[in-house]
Image (cartoon, rainbow, N blue to C red; front, side, top):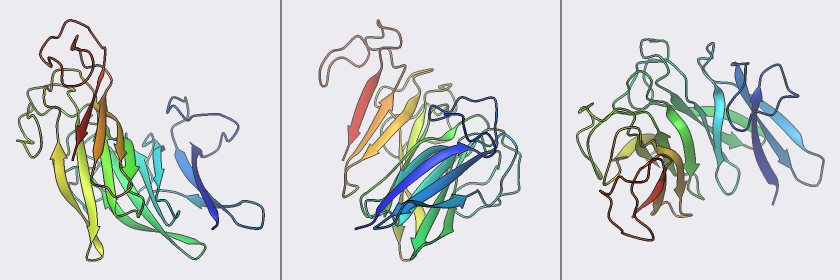
Length: 240
């Protein structure tokens, strides 16, 4: 089986290492390389709505077979919501976006332009991305999303918990991508940054979400989530 790798980088300054997303240069691109019996061959991939300081390539995920790729631009500015919205409506600064590409033979093509269902400025949708093994399930973290909802499927518009964070799950079915689930921490709090990292099981049925700066002093599994006595200790949440 051919080996596929995806690497994000600044467009021009190719000698800089920007895997952590911090750079003085903001026009990012993404390269997908494919190797079989021959040396690596690279495809050069850009967003369909490339913009200044969008940070396209901040987070990248590949399906197991290397045929589906998700690329985030966590500082993209469109006010669109859902899948396939208006890419030119730059009215929600740094709201973030994710782009899904599919490979046929050796050619990549953009398949979907993905935004949160509750797009808002400074939410950083695309802080993290993950794909299931078959590329049919996509998880996206938005660390600075502000809803005060908890659990799965809550009120997306209750912006009373600043930078609490959220995760979104999308599924590819019937030839199209659609949002399936809106996910919040069970103990969402201000500045918890839920969605800093997301992970999916191979079949897409289990989701893990990190909250870098959650404050509980609990230890182990299923401790007291309300004991906010250990600032920025962090937590991970698993959903099935």
